[in-house]
Amino acid sequence: MRLQNKYDRIWKVHAVINMFNRRELILTHSMDRQAEVRAVLSANGIDYQVKTINRPNQRGHRGSLGIDSDYAYEYKIYAHQKDYEQAKHLIQTSK
Image 1: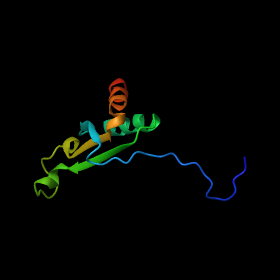
Image 2: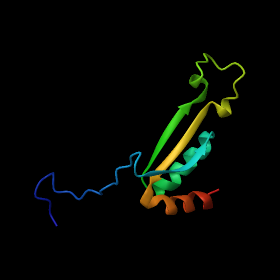
Image 3: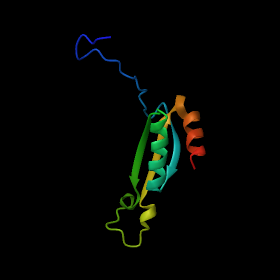
């Protein structure tokens, strides 16, 4: 099969994830765990969103004196509602 022009391609249609059709999969403070979860979801073709919250800045703190760096960031990972059960199963079995 030959392409007629450079626009003749097949694109995978991704579901748009927004606040009305998403569910929270996991909340973690570990950068390694969120990277692991993202890798599992990507490897299985599941679209996701990550929301990162910098905890010390939430209260107006400047600097990190006395703040445990392991808890400085909070990562929330969301998936589309239609993929939630499969995604939850995949990340539970990846521990």
